[in-house]
Length: 288
Ligand code: PAF
Image (tube, rainbow, N blue to C red; front, side, top):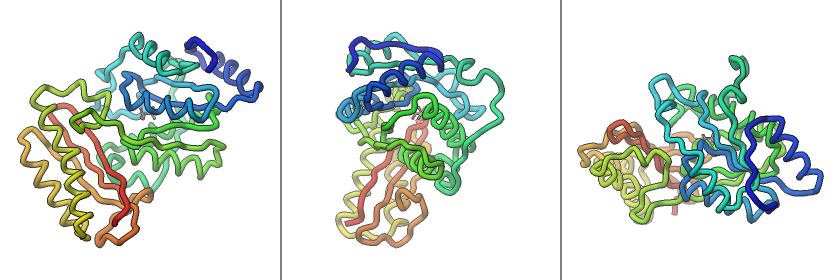
């Protein structure tokens, strides 16, 4: 901990500060975010504080990862609130660049990761993970962290970033951190603020369907299709829910599985819309 939170908005200023800390032999932990912080983000900072002497957080709503009909312009933003939450949580350096700072000209370079992006959100949000991998690679070059912390709620994002780091030999350890949930089970997300009260209640079916799937596995069910179908039926009973996908996939390869085998690591993942709000949730588990 170096004391008061310092906010930097330019790439040069951030680089200079991080280089000074690195020269002093400090380990740099990095928590990339799009802001509108919640306890999920703060749990990443907590983990970063345990492993690193300096914690850098970025807040940047990255236009590259939003499709033309997605919520880039209405994505919730509140930098003042984020700044005090980050300070309280123990962030040392807050990097909050403008879009012009990050992308002063049209980007002609992109990073795209194959195969692990063929399913789930990669399929239903074309181009999304190229936008994510491109900005994360750029942020990694700017921040040069030793460790970077990502929430397991975006399980596919973790798989994509881990693959990118491995393929491009980036000297960074990716630390996936557990999903943080509201008391009633809803996974924390900046997008939860969009939910109308009736949608918020019905959205509980997401975590409930994941729990149900886990129970089926515990009882010995080995057909991915049977579990998937049961989850779909359960979610569809909520009138405001529109299912985007429900999948059981090998993790982290994200390949389809039919007959589940003992010891197999799988991701049970879903994306469901409630009105204009698209929520994702998942459980990563080992078949018992
Ligand atoms: O998970 C997010 O908030 C974003 O996808 C990330 C990693 C900050 C990249 O914009």
